Length: 382
Image 1: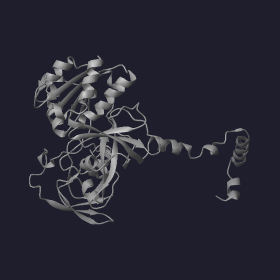
Image 2 (image 1 turned 90 degrees about the horizontal axis):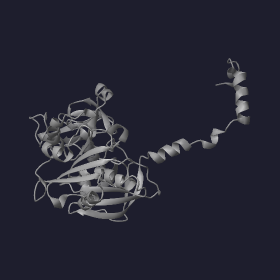
Image 3 (image 1 turned 180 degrees about the horizontal axis):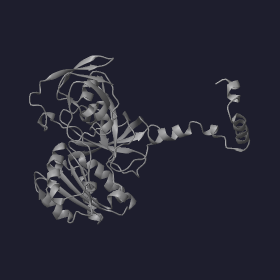
Image 4 (image 1 turned 30 degrees about the horizontal axis):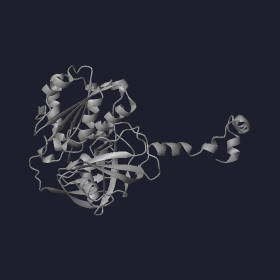
């Protein structure tokens, strides 16, 4: 604005006097310009360059990758949170979330524990192609699946299936390392004893510390508890559930089975916390999937301002976009964080149960592309 016009404004002389006084006696905050942004970016970076400093074989199908920051600093996290690992495989840039399995008090590195997924693009790449010394890119820690003692109390029942045990390893190890006052039950379902991840560690902790109770439940082989995790087993090992918080993490089949088993316990909503664990492996078997759309069905997605692509019905839109060289920001890939949302202009998509769309997203037509499957030709805006 012209200086002559400014001088005509009411209070101009008083403001000039105040500025002169502040220059003389006040603190010059210009010296700290940019520091707030610097601190925020340090705590919540979008991308972290890391190096693989160790690879630990856990089972025949599972390895732990130990990641150290090239910048010599990693943001703090809460036990149970995850990071997203960004890779480029055969020209496809994509990412996958992995829970941090190391403890938050071990600040020099993050551990991620990767189990082989049949036909899995990223898991197979990390297990077969990555070696010690290789570089990767990761996101900062994220996720809401962690224990808050003020809200959740000090008695935790952790129920895991398969590689869903990884966030609990972080919670348990943190309790051991810090001497935090709490009692933890880990009920861990697995096909057999050979596939129990961190089994030796859990057995050792359970034998040494009274606060930790380790209960493997095996589908095959010998053991105290056999078959699937049931309400009967839970009641037997946990006892009264009214003063405990239940944390559940595992494949979709675990949730479908366990939510039925937990009903007799009449838990309050705040007593049950479920970790998002990716989209269903077989979306065609999900309730509500249109019966007239088969595994061979394909559709065209028009990306406004970019191009049209042909996609498979059984593949999330985000994955189809990545295969066609279109990168959309993503983090959880489970329909929770909303980072990958796109606007659905026309057409129809199927979104599995559990996708956490915000009310505003529903109102204005946004979808989470990581958990949206096309069931007609569509037009979207990225």
